[in-house]
Length: 546
Image (cartoon, rainbow, N blue to C red):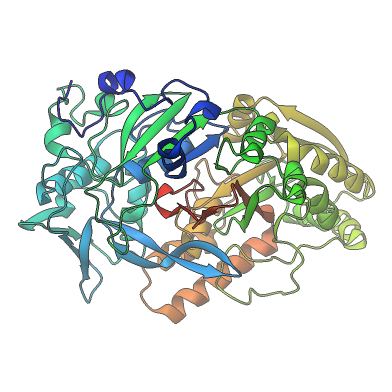
């Protein structure tokens, strides 16, 4: 194992002693006295439903929580900025700054990105960050059997030959064509920069990218160092006092982070109300209002601007291979009642628009789906089903809290137009398998696009024979437009193409995007700086205690 004092290893982590907290319950972290009070004030306790199951966010099977961990432990070449609207802070997809790079140059033709690394940047073990480290990290992203390769390919990053060391602290990325998502793909959890000297010491002929070692060890230089890692239980981070790669060069506020898995939502809520924990982002929507009304916590409710929930029609299975049937069912759905019953109005509706051609290139946006039983019956008759038909509506048991009230309302509403619906609540693994194999006709799904460019959203969820095209939808015009838009450099032409693509999916209705749920971040009243990020996890670097 590695012996560097600042690099976390599995052996070192399991022996770590963290004041009175190592292996203890959250409530017993600090005893009485000034030193304990200071320690508590500078320690953030985050309670999670899920687990951080790997220290390498690029590993297949990495949980969402591991992405948040990766953002704290590793740096990337670039980072999205932040913006504020209506008192809420979110990531700013249109504003990309350097992170490990202090300057990013873009060629006039959009085919070359040149990264100038921060002078004096170091890894957790104190060794300097080099251009060779960056080259190795980028080569790993496109070459290793990981989550990274498919994702960064969406920005035309696919071959090691595209990455060149130009000199001391300078790396060039070359593109065959200007791709609007190339730089954005270097600001995500799947593009971490590694201490290649350290990682390569643990590589083997069978594992040239040290993936096995990096599951439980780190080779990073980010804002936090892993001090203790117990997969499925608890992770403790310590601030990296040498980190200077934030937007203002300042260190994060918190000296330590304790992230602990607490599966029961009620227990997580209880811990925050009692002051024994500081933050949770995955409580039940049905509990949020009661928590807020008691006045013991702060709530930051941000619509998930790059996500959606949708009712999906399997376009490769009769009768939903007929767009008139899909539009008929869409016209019969009780949108407002579903929104109130499932989300308690906690989110941003994507239904109820009144247009025949998309008014803007923004996506997701409100679509022209509204409850109209007469229209639904007329469309069914035109489709050859004047007396209706029988089908099923399926959802994962993991989504039951929102899906069950929706399912009851859907069943009742569709019965009024002659469509008989059998409700199927399936185990999560079975539901996923049946979705992928396209064996369910009508079901609930959710999606998030880390890179919320309209063409990326539409490419991901409405084209190709792949997992995220939930409905199996194919449209030749859409396919052509989405590929052209990816490389379009003329802003007006890009906007026109996006408006047409949005109009197509609204007309054909392969799925009905119903809303963007809130991310309800519940926290201690003194916690400030919370920001909603595209990966849906907490970025500990943003937070502070008032």
